[in-house]
Amino acid sequence: MSRKGDLLYFGHMFDMVRKIQERTKDLTREEFDKDEDVRIVLPHLVQVIGEAARHVSEERRAAHPEIPWQEVIGMRHKIVHDYMDIREAVLWDTVSRDIPLLAAQLAKFVPVDPPE
Image (cartoon, rainbow, N blue to C red; front, side):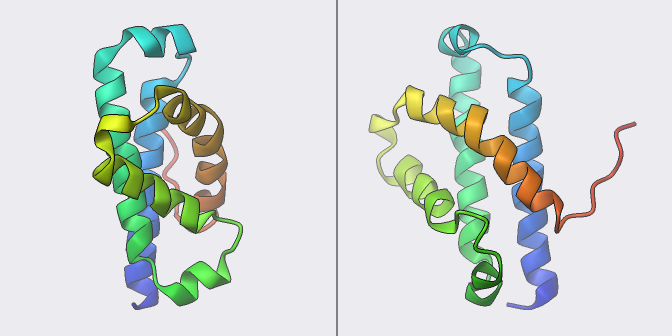
């Protein structure tokens, strides 16, 4: 994969991370548990992040070990192949704890437009 192609996937991952952050900003665990729409949308966004990560070249992944590639891709596999057994506690931990870290890591590679 070319550098340009890898950057496209980094950008796609970052876009999905931002969407997750928009939907979970100021969201409590109790609100998450009560909001079926959020619980339906978030697995899809996490899945898309994992799918984009799968397409980043091996060379680029190796160059950026600070990104937990196997965990990101593994979460995608779990959602796609074991969708009946998605644990909401794991999903909540992912979006509340892991996504902010991933956002910070991806921001190093993706030009970020300032909010308008």
